[in-house]
Picture 1 (cartoon, rainbow, N blue to C red):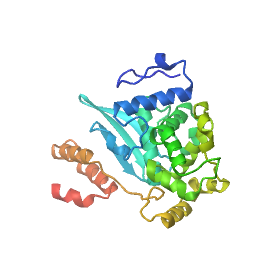
Picture 2 (cartoon, rainbow, N blue to C red):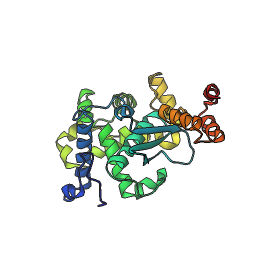
Picture 3 (cartoon, one colour):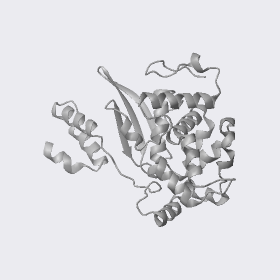
Picture 4 (tube, rainbow, N blue to C red):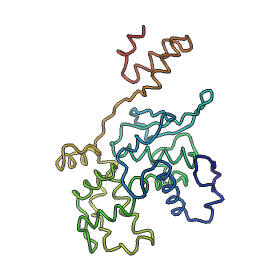
Amino acid sequence: MNNMPCDNNMPCDWEIYMKTTYEYIIECVSTFRKKFELGEHEPINDIFSIVDDSFLILKFPNKMGVSGVSTEKKDRNKTYKCIYINTNEPIGRQNFTFAHELYHIYFKKATSALCLEDERDKDEVEKEAEMFASNLLIPRYWLLKKFKDYGLKNNKKIEMHHVFWLQREFNVSFQAIIYAIDDLGKHEIYGKFSEYIPQIPEYFKQYYNSNWDKLEKETKKFSPDLNLNSVIPVYEFPERFKKNLINNFLRGLVEFEVVEDIFNFFEKRDELEKYL
């Protein structure tokens, strides 16, 4: 297991080396929830809102197959945690990607600068980050409680509207819900709840990555205001980054062409006019 920093009140390797990967991930989730006072099992309404001003979050679309990237940068005496999110993916998936990158910030750095979507299953640290995001955003005992509330006993097949309800409950993608359901059957600790774990219809697989448009149409039929399966490729220009950029420009530390290119990229050229 790779070495981990022992700051931020997070567990160190020597404390968890005897645990299985899943036990380790559950401990990471528990520690993270305590650190940010998120409760033990409750859903997180807005994962982006829990971070402080030491985070710099960039959001814009790409078509390279990169869902997100994270890194840490030092500016004088302050360290900024930088996370990039690809907005060319469904909103529910963006929430999951952000939680995935939080694992790299607080627990284990990614083994490569960029990890393409089809490479995640081959990298152990990426697998851990996926497990962390899944268990952080979809607490398994709360998920089981919802199955009971929905009357999904005796291994009934889960239906589309159930998944949409669960998406709204946990603010995640369709695929994330299906993965979490499938994951329940892989761990003995949930064995006593097996009668409540529903079967997953085979046709649900068609709604994975390659059929986002079709899934969005089905979602809007169910609930027009449910946008977790919608792709809205926005460019979000972080306010603090914008202010720092303008201040550096006014002090002569950054050339106008650089500032103009960045404002153009985020489609905010009109805002630049008032500083000229």
